[in-house]
Length: 234
Image 1: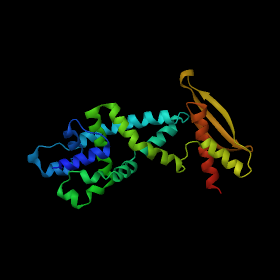
Image 2: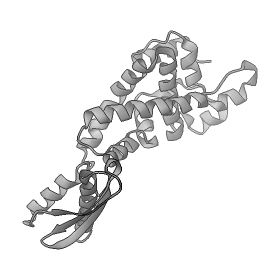
Image 3: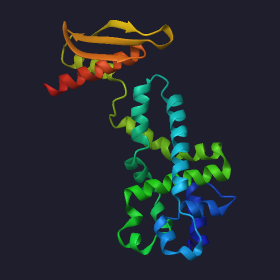
Image 4: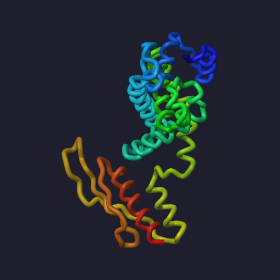
């Protein structure tokens, strides 16, 4: 079983002390260990993984809405999917050395389970669920934001495009091109649920089309298409 000293070390690393330590033990128990030790009557962490995924989704969505008030739904979804991807989760889990604390079966141990991306990502989600069950949604969200906020800012600083209209404008200015012109081709649907179709032209030539539930969203999509067209034809 996981030594109490390791549990104490992990809680310090998480900056969270469990009122019910059995929750963190379950979060760290892989199904391979359960299968190899049926006499111990343990539960693996797959149920916690399921719950942690939902809690993480809520916390990150809320954080992005508050942190990036000007982003449209499509851009928020794109950024969120990057933040909660297996690649991102496993990277964070590896930085926290979560593999060190896992209960693994011998077979999984011998095949490098402590460094497997999928296993590490699942473990991080399971820990989130354990914190949620032990301390509630506020404690879970505090842990998530503390753990993920730096990673989110890193993604945005590394050139992840979140504002295609600005990117396109800067592209045109840098090359002496006229600024893009956005034209509403049509509006469809009832007032409370309209869809806008936008045509984007530069110097009279159409470079992009976009549709969305707001003019801003449609313009962003048109700008994205225009950038793709222009950069592919350099």
